[in-house]
Amino acid sequence: MPLALTGLFTDPDVTFLFNDWTPVIRVVFMAFAGYLTLLILLRASGQRTLSQMTSFDLVITVTIGSAFGRVITAREVALVEVLAAFGSLVLLQVLVASLWGRFPRLRGAVTPTPAVLVHEGRIIHRELRRTHLRDADLLAAARKQGLGSLEEVHTIILEGNGQLAVITAGGVGDGSAITDDLVRRADGS
Image (tube, rainbow, N blue to C red):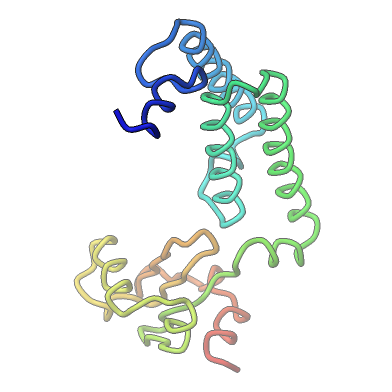
């Protein structure tokens, strides 16, 4: 056997298949404890954490997932550290959500503002380019609403959470959901 591989197979810190039950039991315990901790924290933090995701929500979700994955397999991470990490991340999520309710400028910094992509049946190509969407995305959104063409659409808005809201010509009502500010920004006026 080559010398380099000999050291690998005799290194006491490297386990290939099974060494003993202690690390397996620890992984199972940490997975259960971490999972229950996350369930409790997310339930306590309210529906906001579990509703449609903004970019900030996505960052928190990925960070929690990464921390959870590390916690399950890392031998040197104690349960108290897990609780502190998860609690801090969920607290940060709740804090930012409550602050952006009080300070609209913070909301704009964390969550993109809606963008009007179609108004009064007319595609606003400048907004499509700015949001990195294509005509095909608009057609898919119309189809998803059961519409056969963009002629049936009054307005399509790219919401801050990344979803496309389609308002039909017959469903526009008084238009109060389509603010003048959104339309002016889309038209460039």
